[in-house]
Image 1 (cartoon, rainbow, N blue to C red):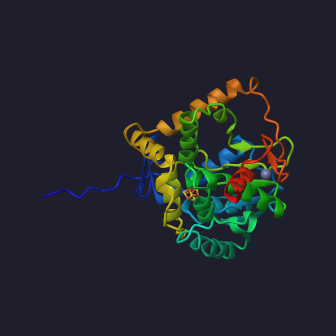
Image 2 (image 1 turned 120 degrees about the vertical axis):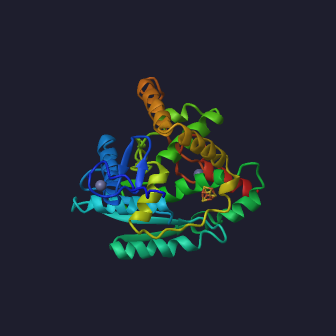
Image 3 (image 1 turned 90 degrees about the horizontal axis):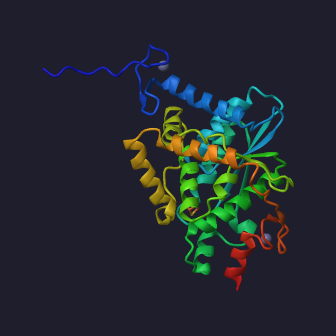
Length: 313
Ligand code: SF4
Ligand SMILES: [Zn+2]
Ligand SMILES: [Zn+2]
């Protein structure tokens, strides 16, 4: 006779059956304790990196995916304890047919439920073209994600400024951050890894300070947080996602993490150590207004204008 195996008991509350095994820490967690540990970790990350002040107006970039909606719900809970702070959700429609249409209505529904402000923008409105048109017209070796990354950063900054936010929260998870570190190594942009921090501040204040409260939460756990909290999110992947180098790096890291739990944290912390050692030696990056659009950039012409010039030639 086969004996039925009981699920292990939660190592935190020692009462309820576990629904999740956090392999890298050895914990077994019940639903309630799992949710509590994620919220606690985000709170500790915010305080460790001094991401927020009690009277901030925070623009939260929400794409409609599991990571950004989890971030919204966690920040919403945290913000309830600070009556002078405010949240406004900003969502960008990239203009990717068959993909970008679904998210704004879904995000708006969540905002109505929480009673938070919702503002929508699009690449088309801001730059004159949706991503699909940019990719078609540019006919470049660069993949769609390279264009999209540049346009999204600009779009979110413009929107955060427009809604008078003094912080812009983005939902980059531990996985996203480590993928970016390795992509920079592959591209030879190692110095970029020393300036890419959990809080990115422009000393001249033309870029709204960006914060990454999920930078110490693995993506697998934001997914589970969304499921266990019954957060409805967009499940369809961007059709361009498979073309990116990021996808290859993601697969490699997932395999490593499965065989050697804790690898993502180790890589992240290694770069953090390097950043701390190098912080005084690094030249301060001066941003100057782009000669064409006036937005802050590190060269003479910003990357957005470079893209637009290529497709308008
Ligand atoms: S996968 Fe690439 S193209 Fe698609 S939304 Fe993400 S960055 Fe943009
Ligand atoms: Zn428990
Ligand atoms: Zn420009």
